[in-house]
Image 1 (cartoon, rainbow, N blue to C red):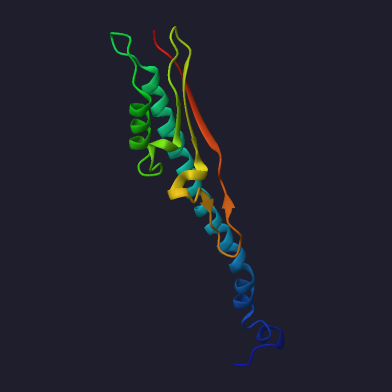
Image 2: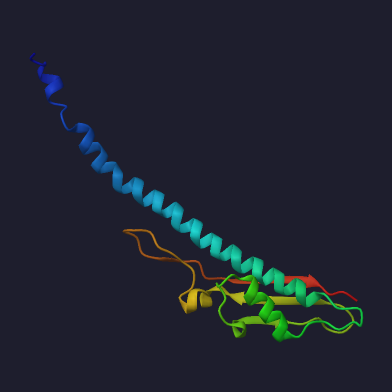
Length: 140
């Protein structure tokens, strides 16, 4: 069976179209994955800092709160490995007579000092470095 000339000229057209669209599609898919991982790490840092600030704001029955060292340890434990060193966490303990407990962390120190980066093939890395801070009103 002989095909008309117009039909024979379309052989391989879908392969060429896929070759043109595939790089854009893969950059888009890997970009979504990369941003998802980066936002997960930022959210982990936010949760850990929030947990540390909450612990700093709570006082026991005698009116004694946790020390800065204890708050740093709680923050590091809540970070599930993202924050590796308690000295990277800034803690402002509750002042006498109320106020706010403040815990901060600079995400540029995350991942052993490399920060939080979005790595997408064929594109330069995008840095998601910021400082996350949590504030809780002190009890008492």
